[in-house]
Length: 80
View 1: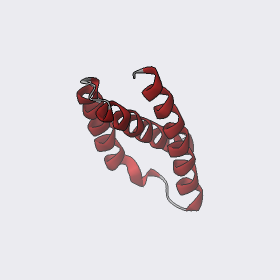
View 2: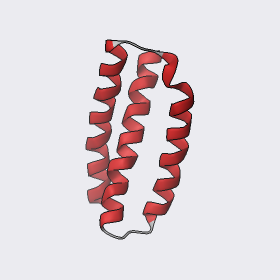
View 3: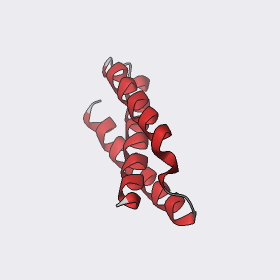
View 4: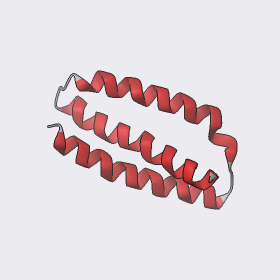
């Protein structure tokens, strides 16, 4: 369960960052709300990032980040 949490946090943070980059580049006001969400998720992640350590946890977080990037790109295309 801890690894799923790590994956989800990596995916969510990077998804929002990827999406917000597209929104900002296109001057979309929605970037303000997404920026708020990024900060909220980042704050929660910083408080709980020490739940797991080691190579496996790092790998799972990185896979989640890659997944989040793909989802963020799709959201960026959807909101252009």
